[in-house]
Image (cartoon, rainbow, N blue to C red):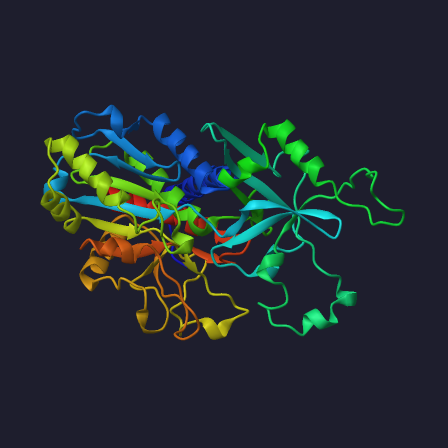
Length: 470
């Protein structure tokens, strides 16, 4: 055993305690955020609040941008980009980006969601993103979202997480009568069209034309009347609504050592929050190159739509920044700026699960408590759907992580021909940017309750901080 002087020992112990205190403080703030950000709209609103608290302003409030300015631009209350303007012009030096997404797998209410079946009233749901259907059965669920009336006014719905709130549930058959069900495959035994939540079960009062012996009917009109009284909306208003069924409950610590965080939406709020916090904490220093974060929507369904990364939001925002710096933003200026930019694609990856060793790619899978995992490529077999980062940029990131004393690991997403997945990296690299995937390893990814390591969460934040400050 090496011998240390007493003073040195105390210094080492003190430094270690300080690091653990910083990690615990960061993770407590992240858990608070995760409990709020049950949907991408709620994530957006809380992110704007945190940015404005630290002096960031909406881009329309700037006629010109100078070094040190803190600016953000949002779109449709779901996608946001924030930046600290650097000393070098964006058109000449490009920007650094940490980009993640804030949408998560869930169930969405259909445009006409209320229906009666067998004496019960259900909300008819549509799957959003890749899920294992059985994981959503017989567990408390919450309802969040926005209803927009014809006059444009909005109603916010939040039911299931406050003390005294009711919850929603998808029922399943008891095992005593489930012999036939048990013979079906995982995808067959519970059809997607049956993933509907119980919303109302009170019987309607008998009507004059009811015959003796008729089965009682659920009171659909009672539910509609309740919605009208509580939210001042009609059944027709639900056609212009964005209502999401998500797991009820707040994030919790796991294990006697409290080393893990269980919660809904780690994918990908664990990375997008880390980027947000890293930019906020670095925002009082003026960088040489503009530092930015991107929190986008629709990644779980292919990054489509006006708020996904296949939209023009990102390059439009870069053009807006350049125009405010130089009073002009010609197309060639934007294109050159994008080619000189770089990005850490801030998305999660799969942690190795000891119960499924056959999925581990000969030791290349990420492990808990070893920091964020950098993935040179994602996709499945043959690297389909990946950007396949250049070794030159990987080497740059290695240097930045080592200089920042960040604990990190290199990994890939499981064995070939076992499945696969992608991130927004492929949609950003098309601009000619250098892009590397780097995010927090998870167990239970895409499940209603995912698992992340506190140490990995904190080191992910430190990794993004080191990159943005480099």
